Image (tube, rainbow, N blue to C red; front, side, top):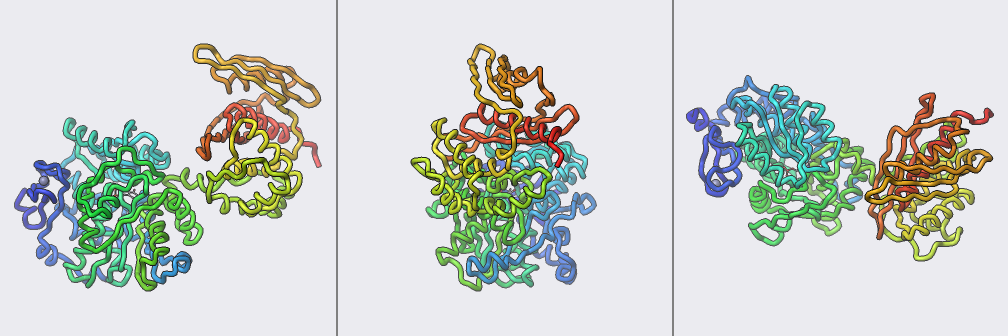
Length: 617
Ligand SMILES: *Cc1c(COP(=O)(O)O)cnc(C)c1O
Ligand SMILES: [Zn+2]
């Protein structure tokens, strides 16, 4: 076995330089637990390399097989990864005063992330080595990628993910058939647990180890190829565990070694401010990385307390004369929007890190106008739609009435979506403004005009908010405006909540009483419930029971918390159906979750009432 490998490659610890055969270990050094590197006999590779085919066949990860540590080509597990577009950013280039800014769109891979390139090699090796099952830790994307390839290879797959992993990634992974365990811990703790699990149960340990890195080198090969067999001046890449940026650097170094390119790029590592272990170490010229106990960032794919491949990253940055930059979550989320709006590429937050760094660095005059700059957009935006939705409020919902369409256009309601992004936590005033000042504020913050009727309802919502003792932030005002613009408040309400009261305690059932107007009647209700919201809704239903024309039931209830300003605001979304199966969604925002719930219910009821009993025009 050893003889085959020695002809071609061996595994060597980057710290203590001990060499291993892959059957001894292909993950961590058995002596010092350091990361391993695949060291090749490049003369052997050169002999096998078909330069003509390389230069003349379409780009794909598979055409670089000669540069991967694969021994048995019959076992290849592939979904046709790689061959992703190198997109010239014509619009954002202008903004940053750069000519040659590119995005390598890795979201175009089979499972939506560059990791597929690494998984190609990793799961092929797992098959080669006779793995009976695979286990590993992931922040979500590796989970989906490895799960997909395990399904093809028919190997059972166990994944440990930190609790709170984005739902898009979980849904994808579970759909491929993997077995997920959510762990109340960060990624790095999941990784340690996975290592232990593999040892105990004899599973093949997948993850950010040497074989994966080999597969991910193909990003560098493709970038060079797409630039006409030239390295760019800079490559910017997000850093989590640090495997990918190290892979990209290794890829370029190999191309130069093989005579396919003449120069090497400078590598720039990008991390979010809330988790910037590598950036701190590099910029303080320290080899020692300091663990971040609680990563705090929307860039969940790079929320890694202690990057296992950090030492490789530091070497890549030093050898390439590169740099390390951190950017704020707000800048990342805004850049996620800009990349979508200017270049029509939808990325997840981590994928926007490099472009956010370009924005920051170009402001400082870091680049020359002619520099060729490549940003690796690592993952597809569909993986984490919730982070995008944070920046782009839900569009208004209307009844099928052309007048409502006209209003949407007249008041430019679409503008609120781009203006609302900035300074969401800003407190807008100390004293509630008069109506004409409010109109001005709304115009300057959101760029939309409001008519007197809408302005009035916005004003009264603001008063309700402030009676709860909440300062109004820009986010709050946006929620209020959106709600009022839904046109709901200008319609006749058949059901109107006049007042209510709810009591709840740790040991007793919640109870509630309510007073409503129903048509021309005023009715009272009282009920207990499993919680305050349940008690109120039950009380409400009982108050109208003898007259109820709809008997609606709730099918979904969802609470979202905005942590803007001093106290949180909640947005409640409800889905209700009536007895004929008409379904409606409504939402309401308030600092008080019960108020928001009651008001969302009231809306659901009235929408369904209008659907059923709207006077014919
Ligand atoms: C995994 C991942 C990263 C980080 O790559 P590392 O190899 O862990 O440094 C960045 N972005 C996305 C979208 C990822 O899935
Ligand atoms: Zn070692």
